Amino acid sequence: MREFLVEITTTVPEGTGQDEIDERRAAEAVRARELAASGRLARLWRPVGELRSIGIWRAADEAELHEKVLGTLPLRPWMTLTVTALQPHPNDPGPDRAEGAP
Image (cartoon, rainbow, N blue to C red):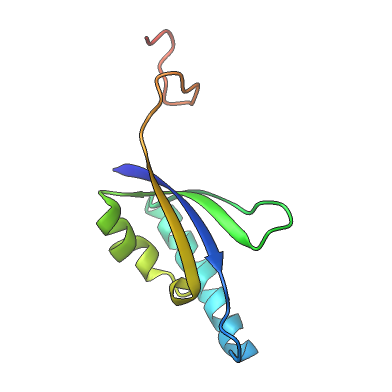
């Protein structure tokens, strides 16, 4: 599975009722937990003082990411996305790097 850096800005359409907003946000939290449990959502952050999120998401390719992962989010119709495909860096000190690997 490939990893993608996804920046998400959610803008609620003007005139949307509070009940709909609350329902979608609750459903979004449930769906995010499901995607995390399945390994599709690896990490998610919110920059301090900003109403956007930045996350590491996983899918076979970008088409699958949009269709079967991000497209299943209840807030997706209100989202603007920036997707960047990632690949490992040879100097990554991350946990998957074996001790002494070149």
